[in-house]
Amino acid sequence: MSLLFFGKDPDTDEDHCPSAWVDEKTADLVLQGWKGDDITRAECLKFGSIPGTEEVIRIPARMVPQIRKACDAAERAASGAGSPELR
Image (cartoon, rainbow, N blue to C red; front, top):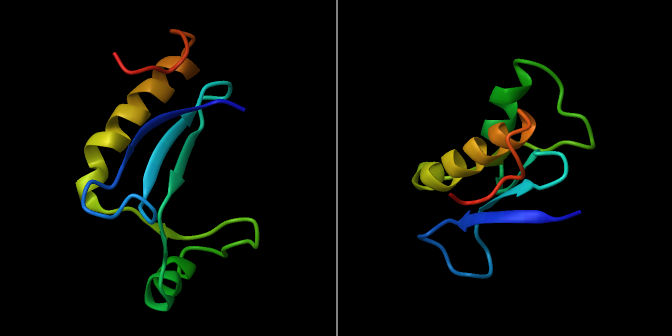
């Protein structure tokens, strides 16, 4: 697997911060975030279960620019326009 890195949360330390990548082979988004607290999980459970293989995560709004770039790259790759990369 090869992940293309798009950025970390600019307001957290380098060791513990939400991050965004795109899998270059599948064009899947890969996101690291803070685990949702009990209140967040309870709210999400109103819409369906959270299987053991999934997790509710929080990504800070200040990461929208990195996630937008990752989404654009993933969309290009999924449409056959080439591998995701910063352009």
